[in-house]
Image (tube, rainbow, N blue to C red):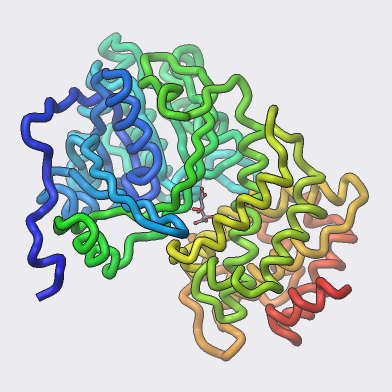
Length: 476
Ligand code: CS2
């Protein structure tokens, strides 16, 4: 019998008063449970309030099936380079599975006690076109939601329907707090919500535009997907059997535009930064962290590395990251007030090197068509506009093209996960890729210097392989 099976199931702390629900969270995955939920739990412990969370899974029942038997309590295991700490998180009050009961989700969102709807639905969850930020009106879920506004499928459809109920009943709206890695994430969600609402009821769109706050945020914590062996590790460390633990690094950051149309927890008391302008923080994080994460994911996977820490344990890749930050990424950024970008980059490398975090290159490689614009292409466009070459970032884009081809350097199939996977697998040439308008903005795709550099990087990758290309590049 395993250690996990010998232990009692994790559950609520006896005698602890349970708060009312003040937050509905859409997209209950490991990231939110290891980031936002912990801030909320700590803010409540520090300063009170009814900020219990109703978690909503928009697609699958897995999280509910794991969490419900343990009363929605779970362990957050902090994996530092030198040790591990377990924290019991008791802030989720219940979990709903939207496709099973859309009405229950809308009732939760309409409840006047709910002041905030938070979201982590990943980049593709906003049903927008990544290169423009506009709603994709042909997305099947959006087509469905336009025709069935009271029983939606998409996250945006739920936001609009939940707000419609509040408008109809005269209840103050909730703040929509997007916690996904998108630039100007609040503005993107506001844009798609207004567009969808306008297609359903223009009066509703006007009310949302006037009354609802969509603050921008920057979220950061490395949280690999929970693996089966993690359950054993938690059992050994904490003495309880927890079927839904989350594993995370020590670092965390949450920068929030202080623009709420209803109440909020005292996030500032627990280290979140409430600011007027999130953009410099978001650009820094998306370009420095997520940009190199995706670079390491594609080029590292193609080089045969399973995780980010394995990839940067190879000095060729660690040096490549340093080069990218110093020469191709930081020059495009305006440092947020009080931030030293070189020190930020050094800290990032140390975070990647943490051997306790087994973050798979394959996991980060997912959904590249939705991630590339904000992680790599914007940085490339800024460099080109300033007359600077950026061959390293262009090599990363070529790495993505090679990866979505679906065959690795040993001739083995790659399990490519991407909403555009089928289409991408058929593309043969750089020209074919540049014509994918969802990914490459028109202006960048038409830039002759970019086209030439991308073609040569792609050819080089195909003939020499990823690791040699990264290595050769450094000696160039
Ligand atoms: C990663 C992010 O999966 C990915 O694409 O780049 O989830 C990354 O770990 C987080 O943004 C870190 O804050």
